[in-house]
Length: 517
Image (cartoon, rainbow, N blue to C red; front, side, top):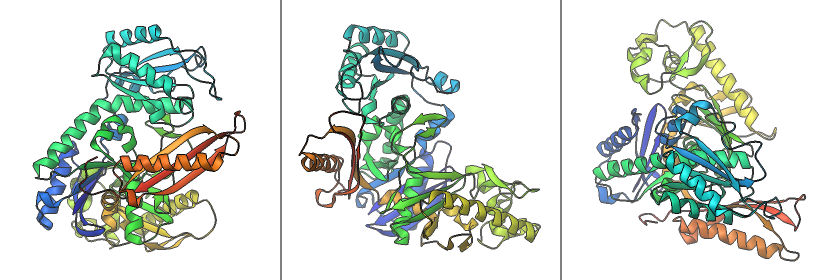
């Protein structure tokens, strides 16, 4: 057996799984410190379906710890951004497009140094070790505890980032966390650099959170490996999370979509995940979320790391309803739904109250919403359906009919028919699809680099890249027999010499349960 947990803004959902069969499922209000809610969810699971700690082979968690820390600008480490690219790139220094509040929250310091590459792999300038040591001494003097190193076109050649990290570590010591951009983002200097700075700022928190989760799970007598889910629907172990916390940012919507695929039996469909705060709409392709091809803004910062293509609406079970216009959201009572909604004795009209008044769900005290005008209730529900339908229409890439699956506790807000799309699939255990998605997550390996393809060597080169992705998945803990390539892109770059080609390969496999990686 294994446990899947997903932490949302309103509820923490948990499921007890035997393979792909759901043995038990619970919802618990998300607590302000998040970790307490996870412990309580595990305890609720045990009460509903008793298990011994040694029976659990793995615990998979999708958490909002890190994205919340960034959005709230709290618990971030003093961080330095070091860019290798002089004499180029001086016009737009690191952190140029960051909000002032976030720069202050990380006590930001930025540095420019020589190094980096042209787009064709030619060096811009040689690395200057003395220059880097001087920068490192300044970082040390200003109390920097985490460093983000980015080099121009490091996805083409990352050796300068690695060497710079060695020099910085010599001065700052092994206790300082160093993040390298070629390991985090894709081609596109500012976006890749931003993602790396975010990752660096979260490194200390990552160690603290992983330790906290480990202690909490161990306190319940569970000694199995703990995994956190990534943006792309795959898992990472505790050590990986400490290095790359930024990879967890979109795990919530991803888990819901993966859970929708399992519970509905549909590998390609549109998924509407309605929680307590937002409705997230995305497309499943071959059982995995379609990834965005564009830059992604996180807390107002442009990034380009792996993220699912998700459109979020401020509509959820906790969304506040305007009593005059009938508009829903984007403000939400969040995890206070159980005390602030009318049906729970509160004084705020929420979307959940509307669903109860319409007879779509039996929770709380229905008499508390008996005064609502039925016409007003139907107007609100129709508006919700209209906005969700428009969002699904925006997400699809062709006019062909597409199946629609609704999951999440807030999906009670949708009727059985959706304008433009017809019947809505609402599978069994739809309310905890996100936790199910976390529990069935696989282990992946991705390669996204620019290669020089020699004449007559194309097939051999592509085979080598595929093998590298498969090896990466196996190293992350995937069962070798289960690994397969699920995504492959080959894009020639005509403005680069030497038959330059950007190749992206993604391999996934089933986690070897109980095996520590």
